[in-house]
Image (tube, rainbow, N blue to C red):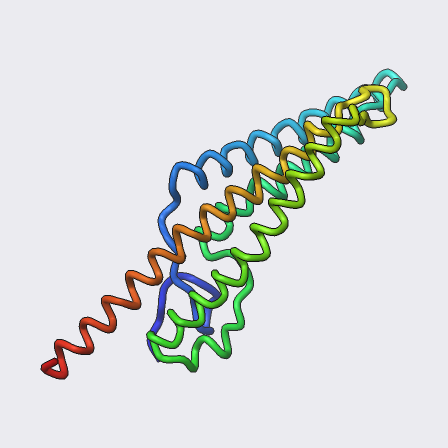
Length: 185
């Protein structure tokens, strides 16, 4: 059984989907920044509660927004690094061509669902903007701001899926061309 790249020890593995592009790198850095902000907000709240018996009362809200940022902005980088779940026991039994076809089908289905989600998230952001919705908290955050993270994350994942889909189609064509040249066609 051929090894296809880094993965779990002892089992079938998956090669990195494709190298990170500008979008994936930017989203990964923004996710890391959101994680740092989350850690700082929680640390400040812990220190002020413990040391001064005082709370800013906004750490939960900011923390929730940072979790949304981390979750959605990391999607494209996770995809380009092959971090999503795969049915490895099926993939291991497929030929290289079968694995590519399986990957292309997965990416097409995922792209369709992600495009629909992005479209729906755009509608959510537009209605939040149009109606001036605000969080019922001390910060009164305009809700279109955190909801915009959903659009950005999903759009970045769509771009990453398109990139890896194009790369897989190129690999499939090169496999087909290599097979034809070996058969003398």
